[in-house]
Image 1 (cartoon, rainbow, N blue to C red):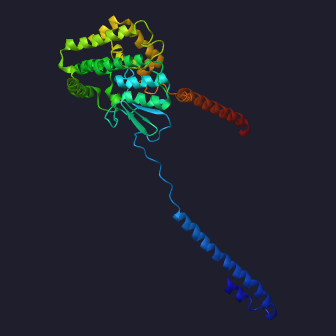
Image 2 (image 1 turned 180 degrees about the vertical axis):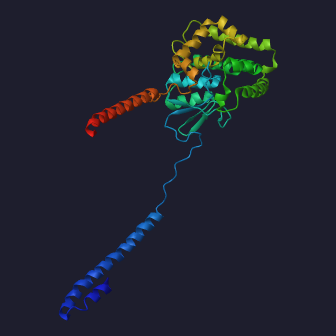
Image 3 (image 1 turned 60 degrees about the vertical axis):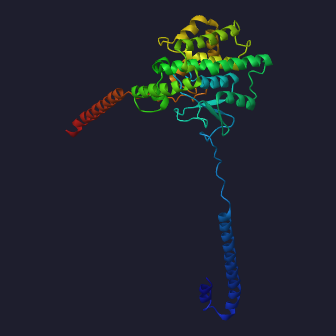
Length: 371
């Protein structure tokens, strides 16, 4: 730029050159100075960007569901069946309690792929932390959200509740487990179990049922033997269950719930276990179920009372195998009415014929002029 300006001033008279030089050279120097000043600033900005610390990555939690919502309980349990919300009394216990106390929760349809760190179902995740074991889940969630349905019980009543729950979960539940593992085919028929849906697999159900009967029976019988109840005679095991039902029926009496007009944890545990018998398909043989239904009307009414209070949509939920029937559903998308293809074709042909008639009429009008 300086060179071009100098050459242009060669042919200019001397008296004019000096003023031009005085005007041009300061301008060029100012321009060069401005350009030199810009360079360090740009370099500084670039260096600043390069040296700026990168944004810290989003925290990763040691749970299955990373994109969780705050204070929402995520429940991992077994799939629905067409006759019962869950064929596990422990899973049904937790979900019944969640509904009873009104906590916001969501079932995770994990196709039975996940277990807790303790190897159990159910387990829940809350704010990036896992809680396993049904008793601990209810205890910790109750403390976290201030939901103690046993708050109105006296110490004596709490002691009775504890003893009853121990009887059910350490004795009665094993009677039912023994029956299930002894006759796994009745589990499939009685709960109308669809293993293909539950596992989310394409393997045919007959093949899945075969492996289920073998593995479920083998592992289950090993458990009931190690627990102790499996070493007894079938008639003795049946009597253990019948005696527990008598105790529960006598204690309930004519009350709505075991401790009055409002349900407590004992009511939840009793419902979750008796539901395993009561909602079995009627044609499936089960002596303990028949004894329960035929002799203890108050327990039958209690089971239905809890079901209607906590699961008012029970039938539809089981029919559709909907794990989250309690959550609001998005509005249905309105489908555009399909066009009648035949009608459209007929209208098109009629329109074409009308056009041909109009063209013929116009040609007929022009003929006399041509002649």
